[in-house]
Length: 317
Length: 295
Image: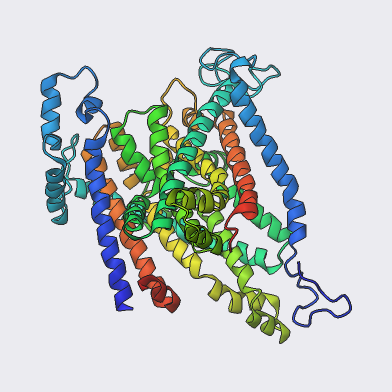
């Protein structure tokens, strides 16, 4: 187990090093001069040289990265080109909104997807199964930028159930906070519901063909009980993995929803910084998300190996 | 198919357990697949025939601003904020979305399959390097990677295609690598090796033809994902640049007026939903048919 965990941690570190190198290198490998792209074609040569010096683009790539990495491990991701704000401060300030959105979306997705999959797997091929599976296909085809405006139209503007936009911090009252967070979270959750339903439905199906299920049924246990107490747990391994990976992905995947509802999260920080041509802010935020994503995935990996001995033997071999 | 003795029911299956009822599912799926293929054909046809269709140009004012749908060709889906024909913009949007989705999907497919084939067949250092690079690229959440690229690139169809192919290449490389490893240890490959076949022949003629169908079966689903990705970027104003219409951009344009003119958002939203849904349904069918055949 220790060997397996060490193996994963080393791999994660290597991936983080290379990924952050790519993030830093992005400023240099963009075709043409980045400074010209940022300042526009009308920029004077002096302004271009000045910006290049500020971005460190006049140094060789390797030195750019080593100085970036040296700063980054001490928690310095640079300062914004526009607002002069410390990048890490900005990220940490925006993080709670995105974290809450991602967590809430994950909870909603699991709460909806698990019953949907259980109902579908209970009677394969039945009407319930087909409707549930079809709904999941539709959900997969509903990206946030399609579903969020539609949700706003029906639930906020027509039914008046939720605010159209805006955010209340948890500190200012949980009720208000949830009132503002729920609709965006539903928007984020819909494609996840679909993915979870599909995965669990497939896994349940193969579990239900195992002998111990037939044995339980032969002893006359009601099918709902068999499904819930016997089949769900052994079928939910990949669901747990996927949920962990989804959570990491959602940290960078709430951009659209944050834009629709004008929420002050990480995603809107990145989108706003791109429009403001604030490459340092984008670089820092992206590096932060990538590291968080890799760390989460590694934890899920190790946790999975902890639960299922077959995985760790396979991986070390 | 399981052969069941007609006289005696299986003792382990209660009467109400229908068991694996595959034929029923397939019969139900077939009309869905047919409908999906029909819709995709319609979208592709509209995009290809756009220049000769008797529609007003997508940039030209064709009716009243924000006009309701009416019974004319231009006004069938209503008019946008400036009075341009929604139908014409949807058709041009189809051109952009399909072009970007299909071209970058194909580039990723070709490059990814090649890298995956190399890694899976040669193993060793080549495999380590290629797998490490794919793992690293997959360490970027998809939208974050696209945003990072968008922050340093000028938005254009060309840069979109580059970014989106880069996004999907690791996926194809992984698929191709896994499939190659399954086939590379088979007897006929060993036989060819013993008969003195060189690497190009082994990889190109023995392994590749078996790997390609399973990998290509993922193309529709990947193209659907790419259309979604392009839509997300265009929605944020970082995708297809302004005068050219795109479905994501149309949703963004109509968003502020959704309370009074919902069709400005609903028309492009429904178009994306149907197209992505159709691609997924057709793709699922192809995956069942061709995907992972060695299992």
